[in-house]
Length: 294
Image (cartoon, rainbow, N blue to C red):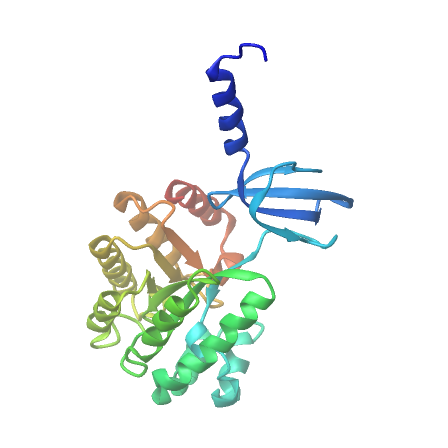
């Protein structure tokens, strides 16, 4: 046998070890080519290799059977505490919110709040489990889930969502949002309830500044949310300017708070429906601010 340096054998062993995968998905169809069959190697929770044939073995291997393999769906905004409550909803609330001119959005939210008078963690968690199981079945594995926190719903919704988050860990990534649906300035005690929700373990501070009555109150709402986010070191998600009113400016207020706070990448705005009605000069100004805010 020829004299081979031990380093050569160590290199072979190291190369083989480096090619080991936690998971290999074989015989997969990708979106880029419906006719090709590919192997996907996953290591340390990340896709490490995609090729026609991976010769190495995986700790676990799955045969996709020629079916499509693609990224999972991400739902960035789901009011998970309200799933399966349509039969409890006032028909007028749905009509007002979806009306063509979006002019009665605030009225719709106030009508829909009646559901929360009967909030109870015991029945909410059953609905949430059903929705999370369906999300898994249809490939949605990440959900930012909002729970109303206010004088009507109290902490019942957020408690149910936190419980579901822990139950579905490793199956569906549920980020729980403590959401001040009825305002923080106009709703006495809401700030205290939000703090209690964060103490319970909520993942995200949620706000809806446009629901407040004055521009000053909108700014205060945004400030309270970011103060909580800084204190608990959590991201922020806010529903902004969600009505047919081109005078609403809470998206701008949120962005301008994001920049000095340093919350770029941790600040998300949802439901900015009024942006479709802004005059072009203001829209361009807003776009520049949003870019700075990330």
